[in-house]
Structure formats: C-alpha cells, structure tokens
Image (cartoon, rainbow, N blue to C red):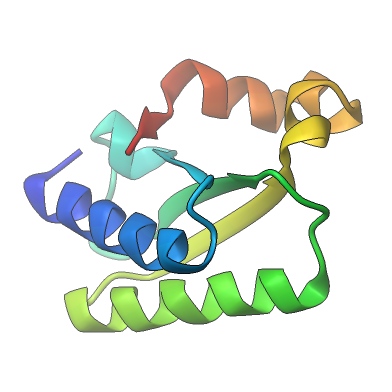
Length: 106
C-alpha cells in the first residue's frame, strides 16, 4: 500500500468514525497487495455494531466519494454489521476470508 493510499484510508476512516465511532475499517485488494494499476480502485470494508441500512450504506459511499475525489482515487466500499461479518453467512465467504487475510486495518 502506498503512503497516499494509506492517507486516503485514514481520512475515510476518520470521516466514518465521526458518525460511527465503533467502525472497523480495512483496505484490501490490489492496492494493498501492491498490484494496482493507475485505474485500480481502493477496496474498503467497513464493519459496524448496528444493522446496516440503505441510508448507512449511502452515507458511507458518499464519504468514500468525497475522500476519493480529493485524492484522485476511486474508493469502493462494502459494509457489514459485526454479527454478519463475524458469525453470519458472509463470515464464511471468500470475500471476507480475503479481507481477514490481506486487509490493512486503520
């Protein structure tokens, strides 16, 4: 992960935590693995201690767009509630396994 990507991740996490202080935030994917090209997005997983609504997903997506726009990065977010991420069906998915294996937490 480049210093710029790390800065972008930290800025996004800070914005998310203004509304959801309990948020766990990870980057994962090609930018974390050092395989990114100029057109690669920054994949970010957000886990909250509450049920996830469309409003929450939209707000987090809006924050990702704002932070990404400032840094010339496309940020793609995936949002889970803690129970689903830790114990629900998503916890057994290849995507969550990848996030746990290669994710960079902030």
